[in-house]
Length: 70
Image 1 (cartoon, rainbow, N blue to C red):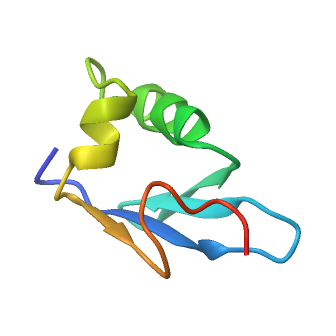
Image 2: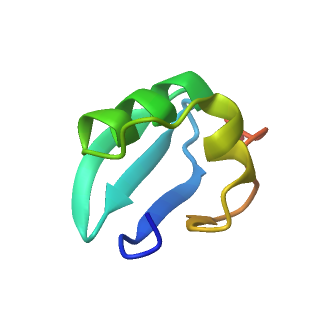
């Protein structure tokens, strides 16, 4: 995973956070579960929610894995 760049953008006013991997928009995640599913579908298989929350390879903007609403 360290070769892929994952960015989780700040929460929107209506909730949810945009997610990009390698400059490709994956969608808007509304929970850590959503983010985990997006990453698994992008080929990062074998990761669960704890792996995603603790990963240093994910760039979190304006809040970490516990922040989903503004």
